Image (cartoon, rainbow, N blue to C red):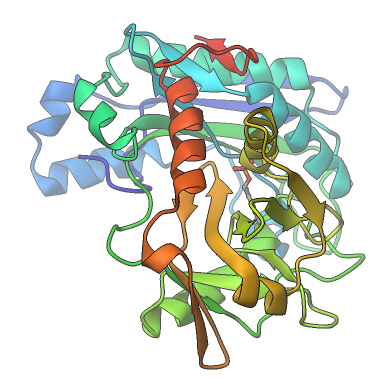
Length: 363
Ligand SMILES: *Cc1c(COP(=O)(O)O)cnc(C)c1O
């Protein structure tokens, strides 16, 4: 079954390219496939070959600004199987807006939000209509959908052929879909503060761009080799303030009951889950502060900690270690507020509670 991210890509993909006439030329591509049941019966070799074919786009250039210089950005969003049997996307309008901002931040033409919305909806529908979607499973209700599956959509930009330095004037926007299950391996939720710098002032930290992932991946690898699950980044100037996890936003519940999270700025990625959690917590009557978060303060006074992101959902952090000193939150167990927020968000996403904020979009 789907575990974390996989490259068991669904058959239908989408591409659009900004052509010489400044028009986006769209294409839905039906890559080679059989029925899901037939594919499940394939040998590992046959299956690998099929998936390789689905991850091959002959019209796209290999050498370009994206593959050579990391000039590209992406999005990640999910469609959730609903209790009523349908599939719904979570806040795709927010991803559409951020994708456009990211592209413009990299000096590319921004992809129109309406096209993004229609493309992600159509992608989920076309894959569903040929049998590729996770069916709702009532067993997920037992752990508040932490074990729930979903369709992960990965829209990304990809430049025209190029070898010299420059910005992409005729990018593609590509969307692929994969099934996804629980993200973090359970059993370890320990985090360690890294010395590495993810983002610098006046840099690209606010853009969901490929290049921003290099350092966090290295930091997370390093952390994992030391027995941790996650790396925590501090600000790169003073190395005093918490900024993010390796690819997720971070929250702390303090002794006084308030919830704090680093304020947005050019070194913080404006997460959609971050924004949603802030709204849900405020609606529960919790005081939420978006401000500078000194690591020294949370090592002393935080009673719960969790990270948010489309991949991570809401994942509790049991402890943070910095320079050999460890702060353990809530005895190393998920806290009450963390669990309440997770439950509230997942229930909305899987259609187990009413979507009063109109966050969910029908396929
Ligand atoms: C994508 C991302 C997040 C989470 O954003 P969501 O919209 O909640 O998925 C957080 N931090 C970084 C660096 C990211 O790239």
